[in-house]
Length: 315
Image (cartoon, rainbow, N blue to C red; front, side, top):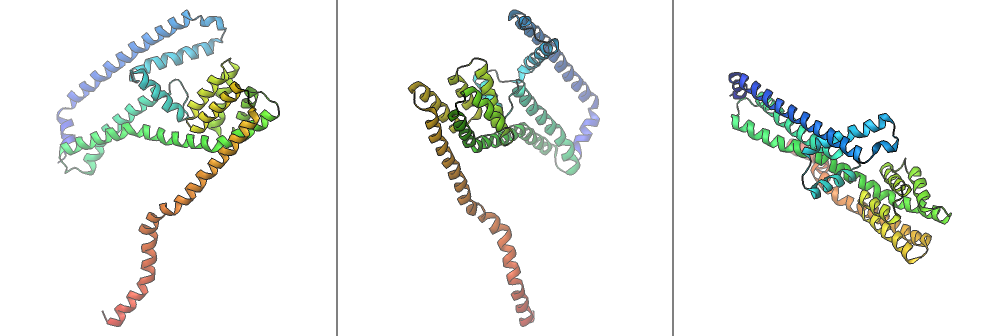
């Protein structure tokens, strides 16, 4: 029975008023939150003497607008600082480094969940008009959950892709770093040069190296910059590299020799991963071969024999 359109026809005014009421509450809440956020950002900017930086008016206004927008969207972020930090790190590992990326991610989850939940009843009623009304509600709830998890799944796939790029490109980064160090180039200049060289082959790794170079130019210690690089890359090779550089500086050992040995180890490790994937390929091909290719070959081979048997037996 087509109960959902009938329900909207009978209570159309009630649904419209409810929608207007909820929309008004959300609009007023957003305006108040935006106003308080703008006031907080301006107060913080005034207290920190932002005007003394002599920034251009457009850039200064852009920074205030970005901070205010982030503060206005802060109500959809987790309240716990640990969860908020984990969400920010999750977005950074996927290659989203913007200040607003966690808030945009949370907002996209809410929007997709509501979109899937509201679109499902109309599509379901048109496709299956004979189903009862509670089935439509159950399908809507399932699609709400699916829409809420869809952005996280997309970001997770992107995170795995970015981390895979980091693992593949890290040995090449070490080889170039060995060449620069042996040529007498300083660490910060070498990182900056290598970041530019790897921009075409490994854009995400190049971006993170440029971040590290900017941190070192800003006066951050090499230890802290290396630790931040390891956190942003999210791979064990970067953490081991950070430990290697720190220990070489503390113990006074040859940095070029240590890097050369570590670069050889990373190349061997990359080759081992490639060999492991190649050896696992036959096992992964068993299912598609058994389901799609083998039955076709069997049918093509046995069909003439079966046909001759039918003719010989006169069936």
